[in-house]
Length: 168
Image (cartoon, rainbow, N blue to C red; front, side, top):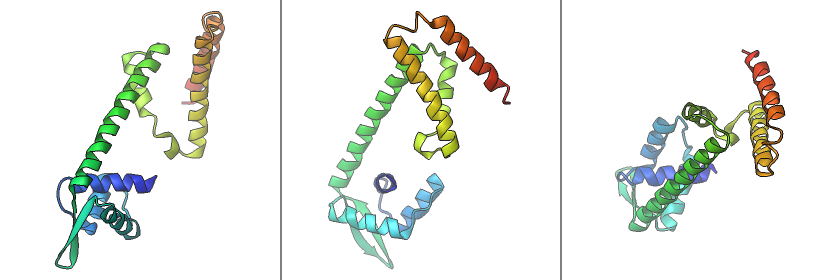
């Protein structure tokens, strides 16, 4: 996973012009707060060279890496796929917002949930359970049983919300 992220970060930085490996490490660290190691950046640059996505030339004691046409095309294709994924996520968010009757201000809460795989295991358990609850409510809706049991379900959720508020 990190190798793929680093690959995209390298292509993005090289899309703005030639960089040395050291410059890439420094800029990625400034941008993300994560410092790629020399042992990860240089082998990946060699892979990109072999794939024909970058070229390199000596510049004093450094090598400058530059995107090739194939590298620019690869990066543009990634951007296109990324835009499609963002559009699909926005559509899914609209669907979830509609199905669960969320208000406009509730969208911020959905966006505030961190990326699931980066969560602390204890927090991941809580988020997983909340997602399971949403899934169960959606299943009841699809099965046509949400309407039948809406008062009981609303009462259960209301009780849970009251208990959660007490945790402040």
